[in-house]
Image 1: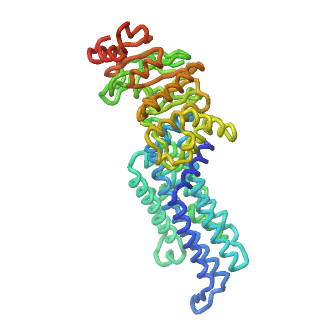
Image 2: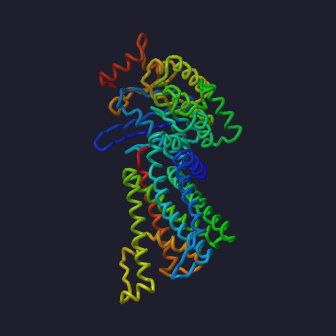
Image 3: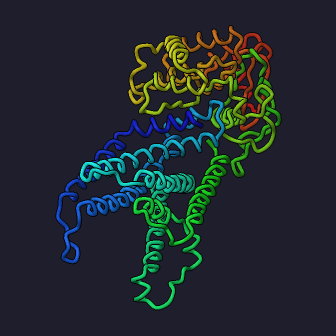
Length: 264
Length: 237
């Protein structure tokens, strides 16, 4: 499985589109530098440059983590169909390799590359912050690694769906699921804020489907709490971790079962 | 070495393979013959574990086909073999070598040797997208021979090859057989089968209509082609 993961990383890195995406992403991240030199006023008070750097880095963290969903979905949607079409699948499975090793190896390789991609972007942001403020934001890179669990979820979701539907449909469906998680949990978290609570009388209800829906946004928020140094209290963090890992495992099992019974 | 016992494959209502039984002994060169749609490729795909049989047992070295261990000493060349277009022939062979357990210098030596044997030296650095069909077949055969397999399963190995290429491949397979290798060949080229194989099974409409040693099946003053036509067109056993 380790060997096929490595092969997957190599295969994905052969694609020119990978480097184009990385270059474009780095370009936008580097544009952040100008944010650190501006003068910002809030309520008539000039914000200290360290605070500006911190908030710019935090926003960039979320933008990169969310943007990576699009990137991973694009990477993951064609893995299995491409292998079927170009003969790779026959190549792998004519060797003493089990189907589960192939599926998990492909998924793991894609995850490794996506994690590395996101880590490079977050590291760049952290280094820009370091260059401008002289200090590295604590927890920034740890938060990036926590977000990689979300990427695993996105990859497994897209790969599993691509075994049932055309690639584009699988990618779109995955993005919709992730989008719903962001909107639903973002709205819920907003409802929990003191300001909204004062405006709206009573407790905000949370329906069952919202509780059970994949908590990718919440996991990203847990990651973000490592940067801000605040405690995550929107819901028990153990539940958020369990939720995302549970869905990832269930989807992975569905993919394995689907692939096990399929004709090559 | 290979055994098929009452193997049946259904695709919905279609019976692609119907109660097929035969064995291939170690060191034997066995050919599966039959018209298009007879079920030959389906049998080969079930042997490799790409497709599951609806009934019956298939074993390689006594292990159920489909188990990874059954493919440990097996080389396979698919019909309409494909190489990922972004790989060169060399990269493709090195990848196969890695999955055969060959690494580093051993892999490079084995891949270089195979390239020479299939007549592809000097072409190995080109991307597969620049290969002709014959070149893809040659590289595919080189990949199948990597890792010193005891069993070669070849599905139309000479399709796309010119007469010289066919001759080269035949010599290669004769050498493999001389060294004690077992060969399961699925081919339409009866002349090649006659030269290379010890036993044949002729299939039609999912069933084996005749099987046995070539000397037994092909009578004196008769060709394999005549036997093939007689059994397939006549539909007799």
